[in-house]
Amino acid sequence: MITQEYLISSNLIIAAITIISVSVIIFVIGILITKWRAAMKNLDNTYRPALILNLFWLGVNITIYTIFNFFPYGIYIAFLISLGINIFLGSYLASHLYKKEYKDSLAFASVILFFLFLIGLIVGLIVMVIISLVSVGLTISQ
Image (cartoon, rainbow, N blue to C red; front, side, top):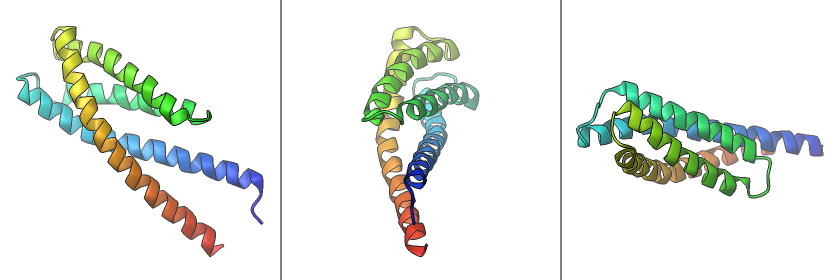
């Protein structure tokens, strides 16, 4: 017999797995995209600034999405807050890492975040389908 506590904890576990796995995949892809965009703009195209910028975005995403996971429609609120923080504070960080003006870094970070948003939708959908299939399979086998 499945109890209410089991359902609540399994939903939280599934949400945590989804948040972390999608964020880490986007982190790895983000490093490559940031490095690629930096090379296109004749900026420092080493891994260090790309890694630092994407670590910041990773930390913000995991923190915000985890906090707002407990609210109704929290994923939408988390997306908006995360996007705002990532664009404005990420641009500030990028301006220091790449030694450019804030305005240039704002455009730089916005383009990268647009690509990551599109990739994140696809990766998130794939991860949710896989986790749902595993969850259903575990439920059926019990």
